[in-house]
Length: 205
Image 1: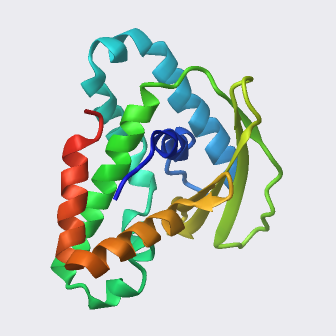
Image 2: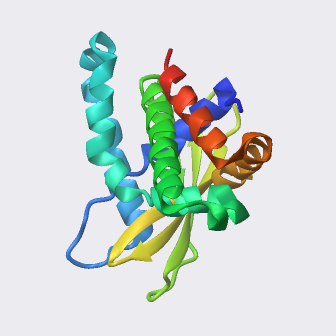
C-alpha cells in the first residue's frame, strides 16, 4: 500500500482550508472554510523560519487547528467499506486511530512545503437547512492549471465536519477504500491496521 509523492502533496491540500472554529450559530460553510483557511495559512507563513528550524512544531499546529474538525471515524468507516461490519469495536478504534495518524502526519509533511499557492473559492450549492454540502475550491501556484479540490462536509451538532475530499476528480475515501480492500483480502483487518502502523512510522522520513 503506497502513497505517491504527488498524492501526499494533494492530501496536504485537504487540510489547508480546515481549521473550523466552533461558532454559536451555524455559519455559511464557505465562509468558515475561507476565513479559517486564511488564518491557518497566515500562521504557517508567519512561522516559516521557526517551522523550518524545528519541523516537529508543525504537529501541535495540526493537532490544535485541524484534527478537531474532521470526522475520522466516518472517514475510516467509509474507507473500510463493507469490511467495517465485520470488524470488532477494538479493530474499528485501532483503524480509526491509525488512519487519523496517517492523514495528520502526511498533511504535516506537506504543510511544511507550502509555498504560497493561491486558493480560489467557487460558488457553493447550499440552502439553509442542508445537512451536507460540498465546498468547491481550486488550488493554483501559477505554474500549472489549477487543481480542483472539493470538500464534502456534514453538519454535526451545529458544526461542519469534513468527511471526504475530492482532489482533481478523485475521492480521497474512494482511493483509500481500494487500498484497504486489497490489504484486507490479503492479510485481514489486523493486517491492514499493522500496515497503517508501519506506514505511520515512515511518513516524513
